[in-house]
Length: 277
Image (cartoon, rainbow, N blue to C red; front, side):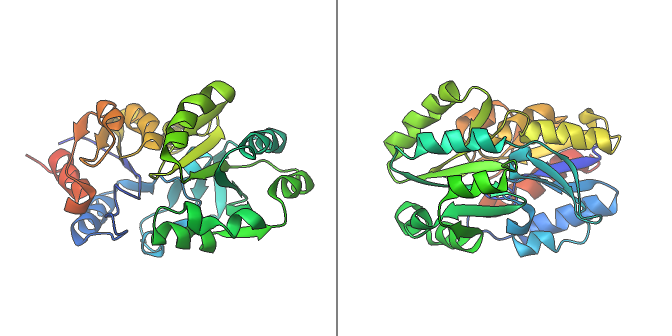
C-alpha cells in the first residue's frame, strides 16, 4: 500500500467517461480515499465554473488545478492559491498570428471564456461534437473583437484556445507553434484543439506548488491523465497513471497504465495502489 495524500485527476477522458459521466465505481473510490484523508484535486484545462456540475458538487473537493495549471483555486475560501498568466500584450500578438489561419480561437480571463463575435457565430464549423459546441456556446461570452477587448481590459490571459477543422493544419501547427512561441507552453486536450499557456502554467508545476502549499511531499501524490496537457503532471507526481485510452506519448510518461476511462480506470488504479494487499 502506498502512502498517497493527494490525487490529481484530469477530467475529460480520465475521471469522466467518453459521454462525460462519473461512474459509480470512480465516485465510490474517490469518496473512500477522501474519507481516509486524501486530497482529491481535479486538474483540468477548464476554468472552475466550466467544470461539470457533478464534479463541482462533490463535497470533499476543496482545491482545483484549473486552466492547465494557470490557476490553483481554493473553493472554500474563493481564493487563488497561485496563478501564472500570459501578459495581455503577448496574447494579442499570438492572436494576430492566428488571424491568418483557418481556425477560431478564444481566451480565458478571470475564470471565464471570451471570443470574437464573428468566430463565436462560426463555432459549429469547428466543434468536433455536439457536446463541444455546447461547451463553446455556454462558456464563452462573445465580444465585438477579442484583441481590442484585451487591450481595453489590459489584464493577463489564463489560456488561448484554438479550434481546427483541418487536422493536417493542426498537426503542422502543433509542431510549429512551440518554435514560434518558445516563451509559451503549447499543448492540447481535445481531438481538434491547441491550447497555449504561460510557460509556468502546466499541470505539473501547479501540482508541485499545491503539494508544497499543503506541505505534502511530492512523492506522496498520484496523478491521472490521458492527453498531452497531462504529461507534466504524470511526470511530477509520485505515481503517474495514464489511461488505456491515452496518447502513446502520455503512456510513455506514466508509471502505470490503467483501464480505459469507460471502464472506471481511475477506480481500478486506486484499488491497485491504495488498498492493502
